Image 1 (tube, one colour):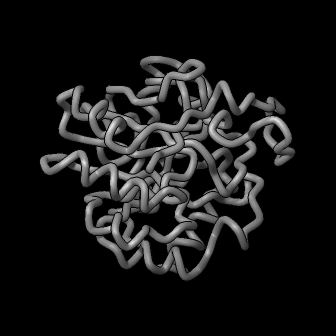
Image 2: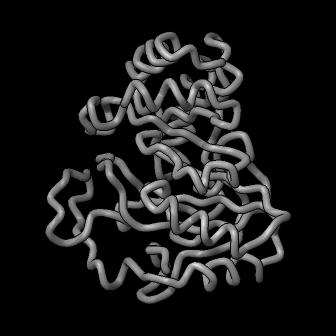
Length: 245
């Protein structure tokens, strides 16, 4: 059995150690596993190489179609677990793409990994965790996609899923904001699904430090006013918009 992963270079799976750059665990040393494939298509996605392969015409602002053979690799679950363990870092972040599309394979990989890991899953919030995977996860970083992502609301904002995440104390919400107009949508979702403000992060959209700083000026104040939490994108400031960081 196998997992389908993204790559850093052709044929090399994107499994790496770095600092968590976003959310509640920002600054924590972590091992990252980036899986391939996504059920949504955010027009500003900074990992479009995980889903926008040649022949996929879903819109993206860069308009790049990636070669699947160069940007996707399949590895045995036990091999993925061995590579993670080799870093000797006890915090694992599973990201994508949309990782929960491969829930059963992830459950087998984590079983092979063994105990002693704090495991976070980054998800767009549209896919229910596989029953075998869910008990193994300590933290879900749920990032529902707003209208500016370009995804239809009926695909990106599924009421039963948002209700379930809001009821799960392991789930932390992370909303990407590009303009002040996005704040109204975030507020409406927070009210509708009774999201605890202590579990609601707002993050500026951007893949360069200047864009992040510009948006942070108004977004940080908005977080203060609403009682939300603010998160930057630390990895962008440290390493730029690069794979394997």
